[in-house]
Every structure is written in structure tokens, then in C-alpha cells.
Image (cartoon, rainbow, N blue to C red; front, side, top):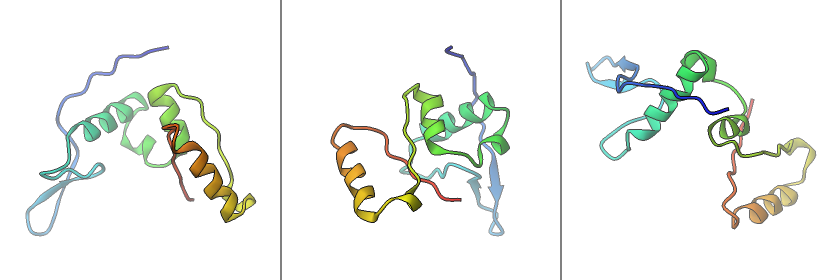
Amino acid sequence: MPMTVMVDDFLPTFKHSDDSFSTLYSKINGETPLWGALLEKAFAKRYGNYEHITEGVPSEAIRALTGAPFVSYEHSEMTESTIWDLIEANDPVDDFLVASTE
């Protein structure tokens, strides 16, 4: 079921020893669009706070954001060649491809 999440443009920041600031999560600089950080903030707000989204399964995040189904594979159970075949088969059809490690 769709849900509306309202966010402002205030983002959590960290002050460095040289008195400069950077965002804590999504990295923003002069060439990085702001939409990624705002989407991340909306996702964190939806799930309670940033702490709740610091770990997890990337495919579940894609599903939460898009509603797209996902398939997961354990790379430890596959050969390098099989993994590469999966990537090559799914890349041309514009599927989301995500990876994670523990």
C-alpha cells in the first residue's frame, strides 16, 4: 500500500577537525545531486530513523522503494562463471543488480 512520507532539506552532518562539515550518510558535494540524500532521508523516516537502515539486504530496499520483485543468490554456492552469467543475463534488461557482504 502506498505511503506518503514528508521530509525537509535538513540532513545529518558531521563536523571535521578542520571545521568543515559533511553529511553522515549519502555523500554530497558540488557534483552530487541532492535527491539521493533526500530519498535516503525519506527511507529512514519511513523505517523509524537512520539507525534502522544502516544494515540490511539491498534487494529488500529496492523492493521497498519500487515494489519490484527480487531474487537472491548466495555467491558462496556458485562459481565465478555462474555469477558472471547471471550478471550478463540481467544487465541488458535493465534489472536492478545489487550486492552486499556481511
